[in-house]
Length: 272
Image (cartoon, rainbow, N blue to C red):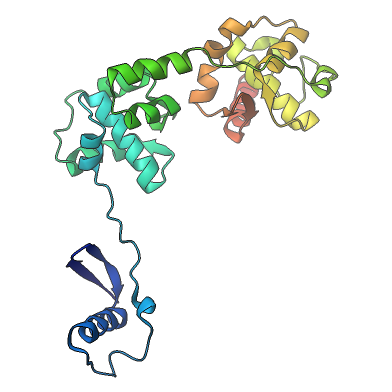
């Protein structure tokens, strides 16, 4: 059985759950410090460090989060709540309902048009949808919260993220691959749209040749080998659905197919 204890004093504030036995030992220890005597049945001989309390740092509340981030608009509040869930509750992928619940916990009125405000957060590149109803905080969104949504600082972040680095090297093991536009268990390469062709390339290279990740230039190179047509300038837009839906996992400048992506290709193949 657990009980709740609360201790407040000069330079100390603690609140948490513990067992009845440990609570009694803490009380007994404090009594020793105050009176110099205690009931030995409650407090067996123990060193003072045995009574040190953990979790002395208070949790940041959802209300404190939006105040500290200087969140003004609903899109900014949604972003701050996503940051809160990621940093303090270790949640990477967040469901919409989890974000909505924090408005009430923070004493904020629920937005009348939450879907519109969420789309604004996506449009501003604070968050993105990884699959239906599940969202993830972007690196840009995380930095925006930490910079308190300051217009000057946001512009600096935008400039930093405006020109992503693209790896232009094609590894020798990739250049030597022999690809066919028709692979067993997969739809034909030329029956797919350009975004799906990117997914197809990553799937074939991962499963057939055991090369787990490909950079942007390698994918474009292999697409070109199969007479596809994807340029560096159009790659990000064409690949957007693969990232949002979780078909491909982005790691630095590299992409790797996920099980969700393989399932999608299998679904397309069965429809053909």
